Length: 462
Image 1 (tube, rainbow, N blue to C red):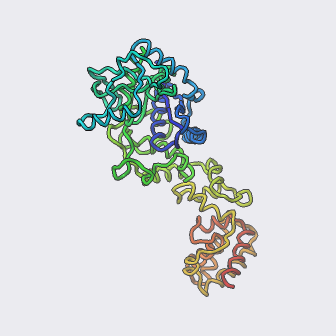
Image 2: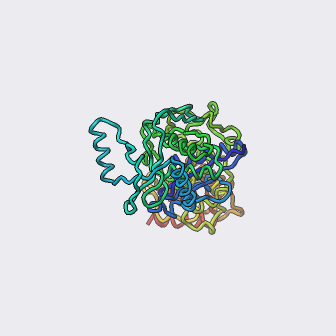
Image 3: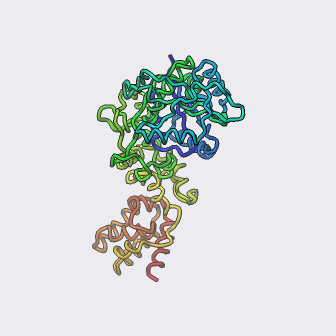
């Protein structure tokens, strides 16, 4: 049997971290078993589905490297197959038309609550034989009302549902469109899905879907319901915990390798290991190691992983992403890959890299007031003048030569190197933080260094 998993997002919103983890687990399970991972866009809610949300989902999966096999399937295009399945269920007596009005249903539930009962459809149209031509109707599935439906879950184990607690769900709306539970069963069967990996919030749908598979004479897939992600406080994940669109992590400077690694560890483990390459995740991942309890989102752990992958990355592989974050033209100035290399070790994400790189391509228009006040004294100006004289006299420019010159000037004046190095850093970058001063000066080049120092002296002394 070829393992076939799927990710089936609804394009009514963005791809968030929970959905991305579901996609990752589905993708890893398929790749681990040398199977196929397919994508289905569940766009049957035409009013709320948007092309923008679809694009963000596709972009997010592509950025994470979760490649799917074949072309995406759009569920709305399969409506004819869904309707045929409903007709089959009607013909075989597994479904029936329900003519209850909204008011009638509301009154029914109100009475049930008043009697202390669980509000649910009571099956009053199950045995109705008249079919009024001018009255709208929905189609309901005739759910078994005795016994149990067992979900044999690969993560949660066997979960039993009392059939008497499952009312007759609507499978076709009055406008002729199918509902989620019907459409997903028909589509998963048509797409030969062998394993359905999804969040545990879908567990209550599963017994209904199993009943539909049986009624349609179809083989149900294996199910794996993965626990939800909670915030560090144990509450349901929300925006304040970091539940934002996956594309926002990209905009915030996270690397896809780090996000994948982090998402994999949200509910899955392999001993005490924390860092996994893509290849290692494919080799090691299986659903049997997924825990049953909710995973807790830890921003600090994500930041730590991202800093790790950032340090390991080849600078040239980061150029395109950093260039997009810079918002300045990096074609006029030092090689961006060399600048990135100078910043990787001390940065947690690409936004920090871009922020640290920006001054290499845009001379400072102002100087951090606190840094100037702390580092500029009357004794600073003679040091800068002697440094400028040395630069003008240099035959060759390099970081090593600049370092030697700073050292010589400071020794001659009897001060430590910071008394000159820090003012130089502020003049060329606008602030007190940059890569090592010798590397910073080397990357900027002698002409640009001279221009910025002269401009800074003029601005600060006038």
